[in-house]
Image 1: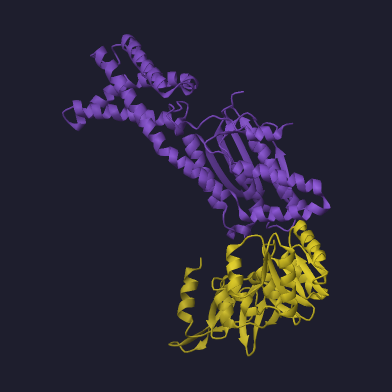
Image 2: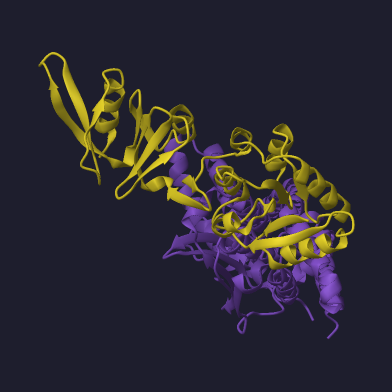
Length: 346
Length: 251
């Protein structure tokens, strides 16, 4: 199996926030921002049109009754069109979104029952306003994305620096050195594993990787640690339900396994059990890593930093749709990550 | 022939050091006197091994290298310690500052040969030197017998009382004499023990309460009641106000 090729072929789906690509209308964070922005626009409009704040509230309620159905239908339409919108240029996507909004507004205006709003707003005004608001919201989302993109580059850099734990590097090299005379073949394999690990650590940022690649990285990392720690490290892999085509930011899982070894295995004198379980549940991918929880070891620094770093990167890549939880109970420490399932295109 | 003891929790690292010792055998003849894979094992095995030099990894499970070295320093024939570390900036700074010898992993043959030559000429590092290099408090206090080191977990200690040259260490079931100064102990374990008298530290966790022990109504003398020991210890007038507050804080 051409494992090397797989490792190199990081799937080139650019992170949306990086260039002028339309926002992902399937992202909860984006949807929430659209809802807030449109309702804020309605509130401002109500305040302008009414004579007093109390009247403005009435006005806003009436406007919301009219606007909300159209807004929801639009969001559903954009949700459906999202894959198409990701593929076209920004200008084309922008035009498509505007066209969809105006068309839906026109349709809505034609069908809207008298009960929802009386008197019925003028058609021309409805269409003009929906186009203006749509353009303004797209502009706003683009600004948000721009504000995030240097943060992603920065976070990736931090990830790199946080990742190469010198303790791991030097101990691994030392272990390889000890193998060279006794078992040259194994030493070769260990150096190959180390190279793959470092290739990923130094890879081009901004790209999602396939889960299969991240798993193979985990296995390489585990092989090196096994070499050093021997019997003391026992890893149970539960990967049967792992969706190998799922996309995730690089180096999200490996640091967690490294933490598990560093905090849960190395400080123990006997054998320690580590569990790695990755599975897909509906449209979510859930990864869990467990290790023994050693009370005395809480002074050993570094755990929080790695976790914070991953949490930050998940938030940048997935907004509100990712989750990371930790729990210490019954002598076990558990980290669980949940991200939306997005498949790589074949 | 230098007798060398190797302590590292990773088997490949121990193998590597043995290979290197063979490589430099012509220059510095050495034999392996023993091996250990964690801190407690070193303290168990080293005293009988007759080792002159200890190659000691500082990051080991159970007990770190620096604490191991502090306990070994009590032995009448303490080995010369050469610390080994993959990467620990703070430890390396402390070694430099206190003139302790160390090697960086991966270890080079030439560096190992130089360290062994120097170690076989020089004496063991001093206790004060090691204490200064250590970053935190010890987990154990220790008593050295001729070929054995007896460890007492600090959390088991009920009180420490200075008597002339020694300090008496009292647990629920045992009593030992240790060669340390009460002032240094107070400083090292500030969070765990509290001074009740010029000559006595008691474990904060073991304090159950206080008893009137004579003295007038105006000027009572107090005794501390401790968990696990029947002996009542006198509280000095000077320490009483601070102790009274401590008890008030206890749930």
